[in-house]
Image (cartoon, rainbow, N blue to C red; front, top):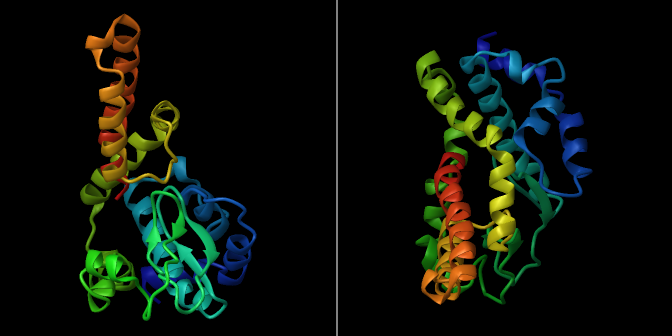
Length: 225
């Protein structure tokens, strides 16, 4: 048995599925790692071990998507907000909008409405572009050495260590934590016009506050993708 299969053997998939079924709100990867590897201590592990456990977990999660599809459920997998939700009924768009955590659900003939079908470049391109293929290919488990794993992990630590400021930034901009960069930039432009420093001292103070929040999100969110 090689190292990758040993990692997979440590995961009790039935218990992990039960954990996901019981989720009431999106959860962090750290919570899923604890459910999948009860004896694994994140803060005491080296970078390579972190990457290997992360990869094995995501490999299993992406395989689980097919299991949940059979129950008309969609498992959305993300470093900061993995969640389980009901799939739209047939004839409704299945484009998942990460900025608000819901499906488009507009009426359509296939799986996607015309707008989102054009946005993703056609249904045949979806799986090709999806990150799931990265995690389903076990070669990628072995393609990382300790130095590469450290670079990725440091990005994750930056998120965790600054999570208080990260969370507060969404509150300041008055947007959901599921917002993507495009939505964040659009909201910032709206607020920047409203609180432009030229409007007075109070506006200048508010502008500086939203500008700080905006720049925190610009720095951290790309690390999560």
